[in-house]
Length: 136
View 1 (cartoon, rainbow, N blue to C red):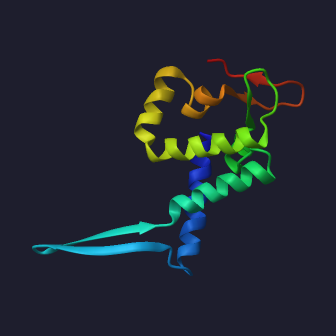
View 2 (cartoon, rainbow, N blue to C red):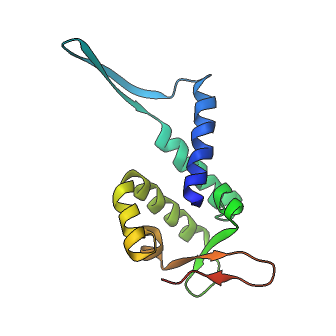
């Protein structure tokens, strides 16, 4: 859910930015009879990756979605993630967003994300008294 909130926030920021700046990296049109198909490659994925990396560095891994949901990612041993682990988690999260149907299926079947599997992390619920880990 936190990723969905993050993507919603990022998409709204991108819509606002695109009103003033053209983010197109490559564009090509194809004519098919009466139809014109436009192939457009934009820098959106770079913007998303940049946003997530800034959250990892500045907010210590907490994205806006995680803060709203009051969750965080920690190692299975309940220790905080290092900067390198947070960056690796972000890169894996970006890759999983590109192959979203596959990563969503893995999550629904196994109950954990691709980045959690490879980096041995869990999602925890933040509270004032204690931290509860979602088990795998």
